[in-house]
Length: 266
Image (tube, rainbow, N blue to C red; front, top):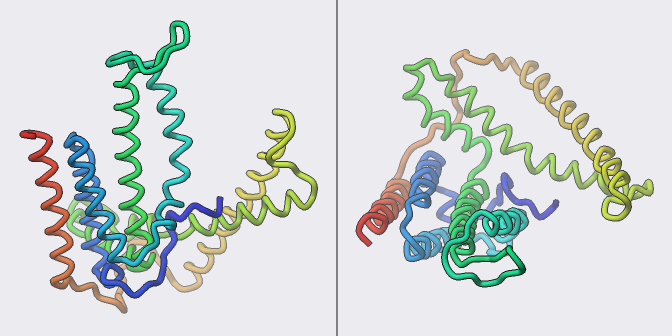
């Protein structure tokens, strides 16, 4: 549980950390779109190399990025099992009776796994190099054109920022409750099915109570400071795009064009 890194900001002195949050969010969206083009393994290799370069530039450790991907491994195993029953194309690699594992099932699972892992890597780069406040300001600025359609840009940005901010807090709270329950004799790993269900309930109930208490405290703090949704607000920090920001957007756009080319003509 403590290995989940999504939403955690890592304060480092790197060129990626200094970029405008709007540029990083736009680059994230462009790269996510590029991932879903069927560009084959060559395309995924190019995206992986680009993301690896960003990770090195941001001075993030690969161990940290790997910790963000570990929770996906169990999902990949379940996906492989489901595909083994649903897809029967290609060469049979392994079989027991009527059940068989075919090459196409493995290929489809690998495609989905690589896409998900690349998405997690890119998202981790964004959250690890962007402060929650900067994320809020960036999302709000990007949503401002939609205010013509009465879209509450500031409120949406605030909700996303609060959600990302509270992910690490909830993870830490879960660890604290688990240790407290284990010190009282609750076994989270062993026991019968009924005992495991009761152990999970002993974790979920106090976690929900703590989450609601945190939400109430946050609402009271915002109300005490005069926060009023929908009212005009001034900013202490004004975002300005620089040359490096445009280079990041241009680079991600080049990757998107390359993925489109590979998916259409390669």
